[in-house]
Length: 346
Image 1 (cartoon, rainbow, N blue to C red):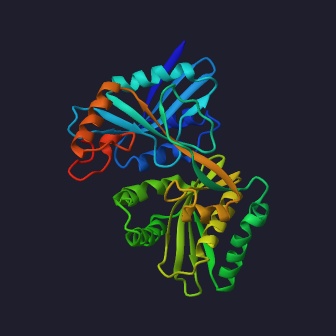
Image 2: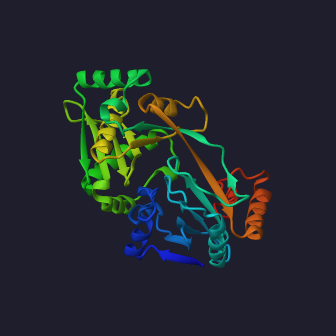
Image 3: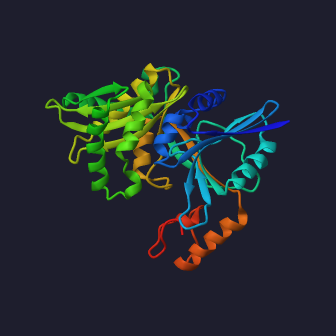
């Protein structure tokens, strides 16, 4: 007999008890983080169980403007892919039917590089994109051993000789996060980043509730000028490089010191790896990816998946967007793709 549960983001105890039953649960499945990443949208945990098989999705439900109450759903920013135990093939139809009953037309999932998941037949899946990680199971010293990390070790030593030092604040205060935010926002402005790269006061207030599962690392010089700063998060098994900012004209070894300190924090908390993520693009020669791979001596891959719950509505919205834009949509949720003259969600 199959059981399906719809756990709202207001039920902290049930949510966390449910998620903790899955060995691959990560910080991205945590309700506190899901609330922050949802940017004010409703969050839910949908779980189906049958015998020893269990399937759970952490989702933010997003209204589609001027669309008669329809919604779409996505996993929180990061790597909150499906949580699976056993053979979940037979559980997907019930989960998708439950979402369709609530007018959810599709689900966009960010898949974890550290977990193996079973997806429903016929869903869209992106090509895998390379990411980098720092393996920590054998300790911090071995994490940077070998020729691939030689440049990183050299840069750390160079930065230290120049008087740079890293400070780590576990469970950072709101004041710590506001100091980070100033550098981060300045960095995004210098990069001409779009609005999706900026985070509100509410976001920072919510992530402080992660407590010691969040750390803020700063790399400062002898005059206490911050050259680089980052936020790191950790779950039960893995840590993640979350957000970072750099001083324009800052010392070019600051990034190496930053990630070295993040890895030390992760190792102290018994994480088996620090996941650094990928580049700015899917290109194999992406400069950011190359930098991360020079520091992390292990490679992983991440991907996205899209599942349609209401095919006719999904097709209608996508077709309307393409007719207005005069081209095919590139996104799975194509009607949300920015385009001149085509508002988001139309």
